[in-house]
Length: 117
Image 1 (tube, rainbow, N blue to C red):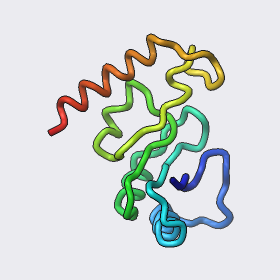
Image 2: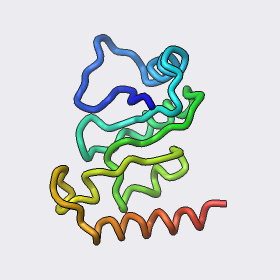
Image 3: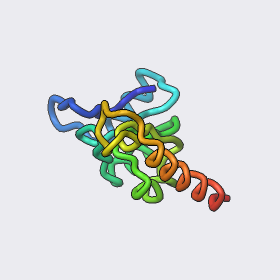
Image 4: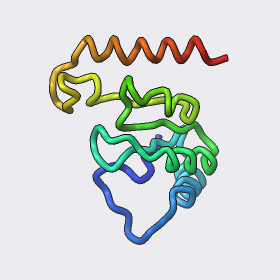
């Protein structure tokens, strides 16, 4: 998998998401591309996920910022999700896993999965 515009990084210049994804797919030949927000726990802009999806030849995964509350917004835009800080106590990376947050997130996953044809 290739994390395009990985969080905590700054590209040199101003490449667009579609350029980055196309280059990555052609040169690295990943099995999937990961789109993240700028910081841990921050979701990527919907427009960035859409651009990545339109430019990618492989599945798109949202790699940060997924919550039980915003999952529905991204559900049909990506083929997968990486969930880390949301399922931690107080939503803070590095804290222990919070079973109630996991349950809430997975409840929404299951509802969306059963509603998707």
